[in-house]
Image (cartoon, rainbow, N blue to C red):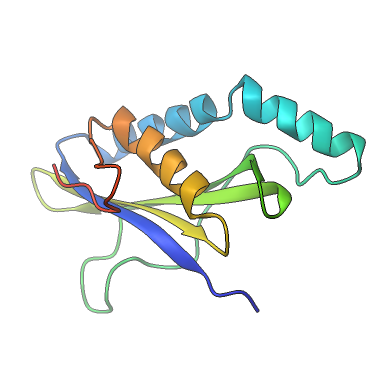
Length: 143
């Protein structure tokens, strides 16, 4: 079984939980642009189609047991293409924890061998929609 790592970004936001949900959905949909659709179409021609954009509720929790549970847990599979594996779907999760007048958001992108670069780019593009800038050499964003 392949070892799974993850790109993680944690940031503070004043957005409501509902707004975080909408920004995430919009950002994921925007990341599935023409280039990814073209790669998916090419993969489908050789019977390697992994499916389209799909939203789900992740089962994992990003916080230790005993801490506040997330008010929002949402994930998405985003079709992509890996140099190592061909047609793939990258997963990205958003967890939002209420802290009174602000929220702590966790963006998590699990990846296996050869997937770090694509996952980092996906996380970076979603984080930017929240107004969070991520250094190209760092997995964490702070706001």
